Image 1 (tube, one colour):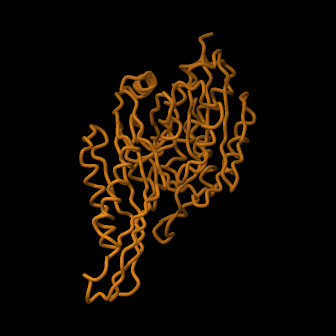
Image 2: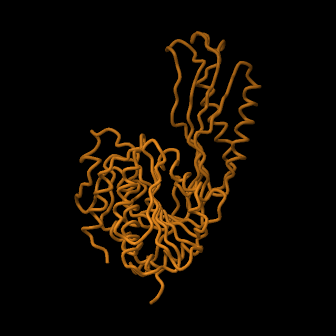
Image 3: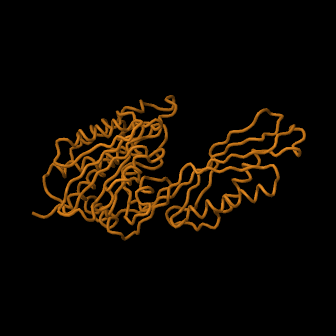
Length: 385
């Protein structure tokens, strides 16, 4: 049975831990969760990954270790941003008008807590599930994915058959997410007097031109029914010496979002080839490319076992069907599933359009509903007595 007071207090407690990334400091939250589960009959451990980053892993042993069900959420949040843009302190859960406001409440401490609360109730019941249930809270998801990579380097995923990640889906069934490639591009041109631009090679102009070349390379990607189009966005640029000097140095950052079935290695090879062709067409031009982040797109079948089970449980709890959605953001699933055949879906009470914004918030009723669905789903794994 869900206790609303306990559920809200758990969320308040997790929000109170400042896990803005950078720098992260999510190890303290991992330790809090381990302590929260200390009175429940389950295995719990914390991984200290250094630099304040940590994971927490908890396991309810079932009759079988095969086809284990894994619940996952990340512990870190993006930075608060300007405090002037917040109507209440971002590090304190504030309830107002049926909503709860705080940094990370949508992305994704509400999803983390909904699954954690249900996990603990099942552990406290003392009943044995048919298969292992694994809860993993990962650090550093909002940056390099250090936490998820540490999990991959252990044996925790060896017997996992399905994963539910509590990312913000508005309590819809998340089936797929876009992949992401972040590129840092260093352009070297040739300086000249701005009155004679033809004597130089404008590094800013070349950065913009090369961005368009990459966009053209991606036009062959088909539209996805849930995710729309692949995208390439110039998000940062640093260049320029003085208003009357043609810049010979420019650093640009691109955020590329890809669709399921899109081969990142092929795209990166095409980009490398295009850079060499551009250089050869313009003597004196240099283009250096660094891949800063590379996250594969993730997609599960609409009728995979975990998607069908979650939809069935949702209907039992609410009496209504469950809409399938996709998400443009990447998740730790892009690391967990790399080279593994595991079905992963996404389910959490937050709304994706609330993530990373000032006055981030959730509908409290949706948070409670999410916890009820997680609990009912885990109860479904219990061996009938």
